[in-house]
Figure (cartoon, protein in one colour):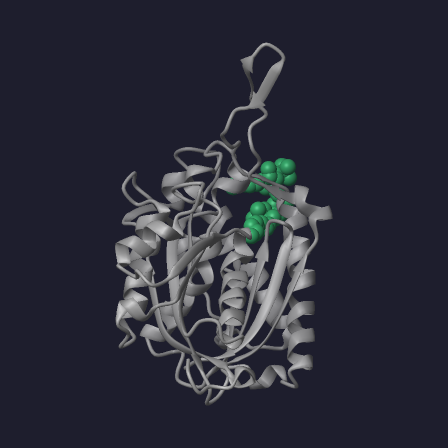
Length: 335
Ligand code: COA
C-alpha cells in the first residue's frame, strides 16, 4: 500500500468462482411433493431445476470452494488476501462462517466476517469490501455469496418451495491506483415492508429458573407474500438502476450486461423492458439453479466470465433485491 495516495484508489476485478451442490431437484420431482407442475413453475418463474445441499454441503464448504476457484483465477499468494466478506443468511455457524472459510483457505492474514442482507447480501458485501479497498485500508479482498435456503424452505408450501436452491459464488477484487472499475452504487432498505419476506425466529419460550424465561434458538420456515415481493421488485429495481445510470452519466445502451438477482425470469424481463435493455443482454441462469439468494449474482457472473460472454472492460449493471426489504445497484466494469 505504500506510495499510493488515499484518494486515488480504485477497484479492479481479478477473478470469479462458484460452486453448486450435486443434488438436482427438478420441477417434476417437486411435483411429487406438492401440488404443482413443471408447466406452472416454468411459466410463472422460468425455473426448471435447482441444486440442493446434502448434509456435507454447508455454507462454509460451498463458500470455500467458490472462493478457492476465484483465487485460482488470480495470481495471488493466498497469504496476501486482507479481507474476506461472506454474504449469507444461512451460516453454518450463527457466530459466523467466514472465519472457517479463512482457515480452510489458509488466508491467515485476512480479516473475515459475515454480512446478512438476504438476496441483496452479495451486492451489499461487494459494496462494503470495495469501500475498504477504495479507502486504502486493504488491498485484496474475496467477496462470497453463499446460501443454503433448502434448510429453511417449507417443503409443503408450493407458493415458495419452488423458487429456492443452494449454491455459492465469489469474486476476487483488488485495490489499484491506476483506474476504478467500481463505477458507482446505491443501496436502499425499507424495513416497513419487511413482513413480505421473512425467515423469523421461532416463538419458542423456555424457562431457565422460576420467573426467568428465555427464547429457545431456532427458526421457522420462510414466509413469503409472493405477489407483494414481485410488485416491489418490478417497481424498485428499475428505479434504482435508472437513478444510478443517470448519476454516473451512463445510458442504458452503454450497458453490456444486465445482471439482476436471479429471482424470477418475469422480473428480469420486466426490468429489462423498463430500462430498454434487450433480452440478449440480460444474464440469466435461474432455469438451472432457481433463487440461490446471496449466491445468484456471483454464480451468474462466474458462469458468464468463464464462457467468455463477459469480456474485459464490459459494463455490467447489477442489482440485488429481496428480504429486508432491501435492494441496491452497482455499475461496474469487468477487469
Ligand atoms: N403450483 C401450482 N399452483 C400454484 C403454485 C404452484 N407452485 N403456487 C401458487 N399456485 C396457485 C395459487 O394457489 C393461486 O391459486 P388460486 O388462484 O386458486 O388461489 C394461483 O396459483 C396464483 O397464485 P399467485 O400467488 O397469485 O401466483 P403468482 O403469479 O403471483 O406467482 C410467484 C407466484 C411466487 C411465482 C410470484 O409471485 C413471484 O415470483 N413472486 C416473487 C417472489 C420472489 O422472487 N421471492 C424472492 C425474492 S428475493
